[in-house]
Structures are given as C-alpha cells and as structure tokens.
Length: 514
Image (cartoon, rainbow, N blue to C red; front, side, top):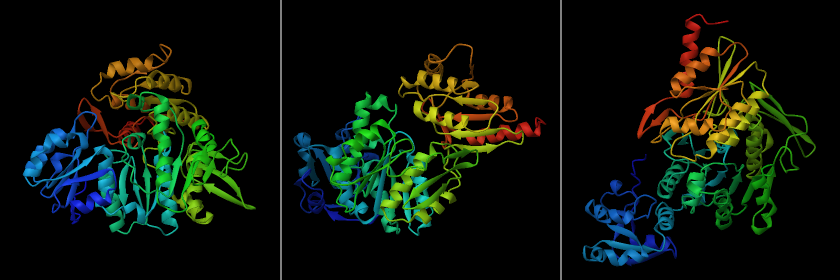
C-alpha cells in the first residue's frame, strides 16, 4: 500500500530497549535496522523480519527467505531461537519474544516513534456505525480547523491523499507506518475504526487513544470468534487499551441503549477514566429531546437540550439509525473540546457516507438506496428506517458473503422478508463457497414462494429497477461502498450504485418513465 520510504534507521539494541520487556535482544549489538516487516515478500536489505505465528502460516517458515532477501535481523518466538542458531554465525541480529504478534506491534510502534502519542487518537468499535461516525467526526474536526486523518473500512485518508483499505484496521506494523506518515504530514488527530479482528489479534495494542467509542454489538464474525461472548470480549478490549494509554483526559463513549454498551457502562468504575453515554430511549448524557427526531429521504434532524440551550442537529444522511451515530460523534467531539456550533455545522455539511443509505433518485419516481448492511441487525435497522419513509413498496435485493458465518443467513432472510414487499435473493461475495448453497441457507429462514431467486447480482439489480414504479424504494444491501465482487478467488469490478444507476438510465432511455 505504501512505498516504505521512511528513511528511518536505528540500532537493533535501541529498538529492543524501546520495545519494552516483551522483546529480548539476543544477538547483534552492532546491527542496524531500516525497516520492519512481517511478510517476507516485502523484506529488503536492512530489514527486521518479525516471524509472526499466523492462523494459516507460521512466519518462522520464511526466516531463511527473509535472510536471503537481505534482512539484517530476525525476531523469533522465544521457544524457536534454538532452531535458528546459525543466524548468529551469519551476522544476523536476533530478537526473541514470547508472542511475536504482540512483539510486532510493540516493535513497530517503537520503530516509527510512537506516533499516536503526538496526535489526538479516537478509536471506534462496534458491529455497526463505525464508518459513519468516522465520517461525521472528520467533518466536525475539519469544521473546527483541525487536520484529521481516517483509518477505516472505506479507505485510509489524510491531507487529500487516499489509499485503499485491505482491512478495516491494518496489521500493527502497517498501522504504525500510516500514523507515522500522518504525523509527518501534519495530521493532528486520527479517527480509527477498530475491528474485533484487530482487537483480538493485537493490531491496535500500541495505539495511545484519547477516546474509545462503543457503538453496539450484534451477530457478526462468529466464523472468527466462534461464540458471542468471545466477540464481546474482543470488542470490550478497546477499553483495556484505553486504560493503558499514556494520554491524559481519556474518555470512554458508549451507547447505553445497546445491552452490551449498557453492560460496559455498568462496570465503568473498573476503569480509571470517565465515560460518557449516548442513547435515544435511555437517560443518557447525550440524547435527543423527546419527540424531536424527524427522518425523511433528505436526512435526519433532531433537537438536543444542553445547558438551557436548544441544539439542532440536522444531517443530510437519511436513516433513523444515524441518530445514534451522530450522538456518538457529538459526545466524542464535546469531550475533546469542540463547541456545539462547530459540531452542528460540521454534521450539517456532511453530504454522504459512501455506501451508507446512499440514495439515487429515479426519473420514474422511485428511489434506490445502496447500503453496506451485511448483518442481521444492520439489515433490520436499514429496512425499518426505510419503512419510516413515505413509500409504496419496498423491494429488497440482498445476499450473504461466502466463507463467513453461516448462522446469520436464514436470520437475514427472515428480516428481509418481514420488512419488504418484494425480496430478490442474490449473491454477495460468494468467494470460494457455492453461491447456490449460500442462497439455500438464506431461504431456510424464508417462506417458500414469497421471493425471487436471481444468483447473478447484476441481473438481480436489473430486475429490481425494472419492476420499480412511482413511490417504490429499492434497497440494495450488503456491499455498499465496495467496488468489487469476489467470485472464487477472483476479485472483479462490481459497484452496486454504478450498476443501479446504469439500469435506471437505461429504463429512462427506453421510455419507461411513468
């Protein structure tokens, strides 16, 4: 992703010392290191290669490959040092750690100069809402005159530079390099989506956060975490990381309408920092005035009563669930000292969030909404928000990703059927799984004969657009901002919004306007 021209060189001994007790310097007192890598394919002369014991591949298998490519030092699991005794004879420096994945995070942070310590760092976790909150906070911080960077699902961006995002939260070494580059380019604050995978795998272990936000927790990623409690434990870990952060004025922000957020809030006294709560139905620190929420196709607005003053929050983002996301943004922004006027104007200026309730209007009087909703809860909230809008029929197109949690598929089928007038079941990213089998799993939660099955996503979108009439809303769920589809091991170009717009234009040309 990045070109790795950081021009950093430091001694292996200094790097080991800065990395703390987890990392032990075994040999190579005079060894210099000019880069850190965990993928042997990226190693160049002078690199420190960290042999991470991964899920599929053990990095120790590639130690000799890294040496052949010019690595000046290797970090090994402490129990594997004896297997590579020849490294010392070859003049290769050696570090040892009880857990090389943990060591990768600490070594990378030390190598790049602990960049998060000199920025305001905000970490956001939860099943849904992370991306929207980062976009909202980015708009607010810019309105206040700050220079934020963003690391998240859609992309990594700062100062007009945009990089593709292979993962919501990058591997620890890549994350630290991104933060280093942000700091070098004058970024003063970073907004990070922190995934459960990242928390479980220690990618964010050496980020010194100022604020940690918890949005909600619903069924997802059980293919990775195996059970819901493990998933919750991973998400909750963001507050343990905030606890060990060296920052002053830290704060946790939680959604207390969510049962898991409420559970975290109930044990808040276990932490040394304060918490701020937000919600709609619960008595929270940040909440809308009763009866003030308005949700239309043009956006959401509501009032907040703060210190004898009414604050209007007006979003150009439709969907009542955006109330929660904006409340999280308001609570976070207030904690870091941003005044309400800048918060309100920043939120009002945000035109859209890619693939989140993305509205396309048709000349034929219907609307298409493209959304990333790919979990049971996200699809339910999306369709409930759509039902609040003036409409004739709701036509939903969706599928489920392959090689992922199968248990959510029938549940999503049931949600789509219950909250739509017409459902077209199609493919999402089938990956290496049989698309027909995925669809069968979805149909297990649906009543036979009340849906259409069109495995080809392009054809499914075409069908939905073609049948839509004045007043209908077509919902295309699951992929949102993604501009690709993964079929087998091949990633091909495919964009839901682009595809829908093309068929809408074709329908208008063919004289289907009503």
